[in-house]
Length: 343
Ligand SMILES: [Zn+2]
Image 1 (tube, helix red, strand yellow):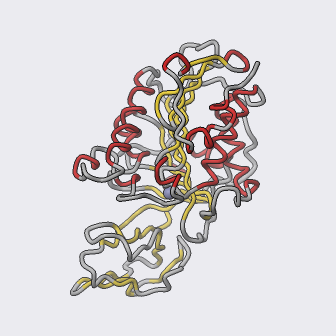
Image 2: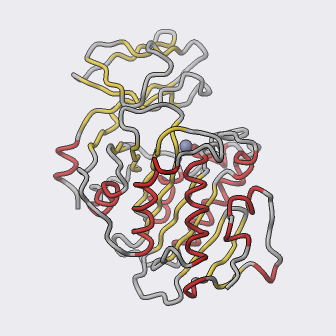
């Protein structure tokens, strides 16, 4: 069965700005998988037979336009499903997030798309990214409306690569939901070779926060190593996440020989209040670098941030954000408590 170019190379198709004719937005590919193109970079694939309780999985990449490796992985996954070399037993929505920024090899044009969800886009209606945030919220809501809401039936995996090095090369961020973490999610993260998990303790405006709250999804943001241009990624370094994703979609069990990830909980954040804001450590410090008690980490006019716990680790330090925004997160290790409370 000939595979449409759209599915054969969803990345090139999307970057070219191609849109299907009105009578060519849906079709059937290998194994009877039904596909529908919904919007630029938004595709739904469904197995021929939808059993009651079939899992629904949203996989997104490119919410930051320059984070190319996960975008390439996702395009290869679509190609493999279309050709029948990857099996699909659940509903799948594929999203390439910030397509305009991807074309320009930029993280974003006006605003970080991953800070505009949960309605935050309404506050910056002039932003180039605002309509895209609204469209991606709507796509997720539509997709999950048709899904059962049994525990573990709705998943969202948002794949990123980090700007900086990390003491844990591959890590996950889980949105704050107020509920204990899901064992199934932790088992899946283990399979994906994720070595650390960061737990948020307040609601955020990321895509995974949105799908967790508005759609009831088990959601995570994956940080899979460092940013490189298209074509220059060593995709073997992403094999763990890729394989775990393929197991999630084909419904088979992967290996579980790695340890469960270590867990770190956010205890505070650095907020840039003015242009006087300074971080008092090396600009290229790795994510999860530990600091000991009483270390002064940041200052901004009268404001000081000093480490209060025996050990605190810094994640996503960035002094160049706009005033009013988060310039870094502080976390402490909570592995034992968290793993003991998985449900
Ligand atoms: Zn990112």
